[in-house]
Length: 221
Image 1 (cartoon, rainbow, N blue to C red):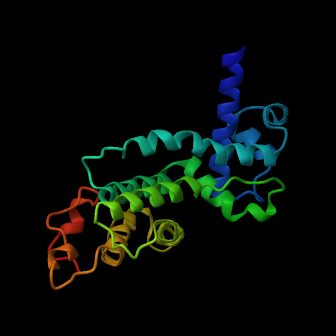
Image 2: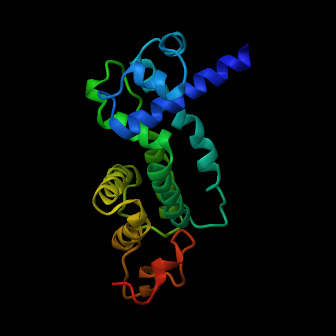
């Protein structure tokens, strides 16, 4: 019975995430979730109490998978900025392909109509960005004048805005190229500024593993 209950909860959660991502919170009803999941409306209320409850559970589900994602970027043999860039591509792909991630982001933007506190789905990404920028600054890969926490609070909203608008205007297939363009514009402002005594700090040589191969084509403009 316990396994059956877990399966029911999961099917309801996945159905709700798909609907919230596709049509938003206000346009999704408990009956819609019931129909999409193949479960009864009573099951929704039994497991999640309300539509607000299942919306919060969708956002919290993304938090549960974050440690697995972040752990892939703990390799200290790779520079912190490389790890940050690579992580951004994984998150961008999740925002276009993973219903839970898509729903979490959309529910956050619609949080004013949800009658329950919605966890900030960007908090862990902001914290990771802050940590990686701090490590990069300590290693001399980021300018000493960059304040990691403040920079992260600017980078993360810009990143999410880029993902949302790129998908809306050009489609998800354009996201890798636009994210690459964004990093090419952003990274120079983070790197140590060149000085007469150490001009090599301005531009490290060789492609970073965080970029797809197309990012380093000599024909890019």
